[in-house]
Length: 181
Image (cartoon, rainbow, N blue to C red; front, side, top):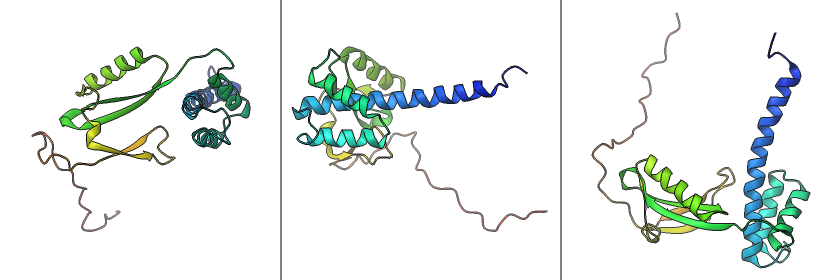
């Protein structure tokens, strides 16, 4: 009866949820570090971006100890990595313009990872400014899109499409309901 232990099942479920929470907490910790550095203050009462990120952290059930530790670390009260916000631009399959925003402590690693993703998916990483002139930044995405920013094109898309692209249409509804024998 190997593998039928109740505690083992609970342990595996807990490990999975803890790993998911850890990923979210790490990303929010980076956002806190950036908000402190850009806002110039470690006080959420005077730094509106930090106040928004702290609210986001509390919405994701991040413990207050972790929030305070991230703020102190970003304010320079401990040794830690410095995070940077980077924007990459490029073209996806079919010439689709793509803007990628990343937060990293290692620019070289992130650049090679983004380049690899573009190459793997049939796109190409472009130079700075090759795509952003076509977009206007409209703000953060809805809360259901966890780590995204909305960019809207300020120019109409090209009228030509790649020859392999077909227009998608929804499937037709059946004319009569199916009969059950």
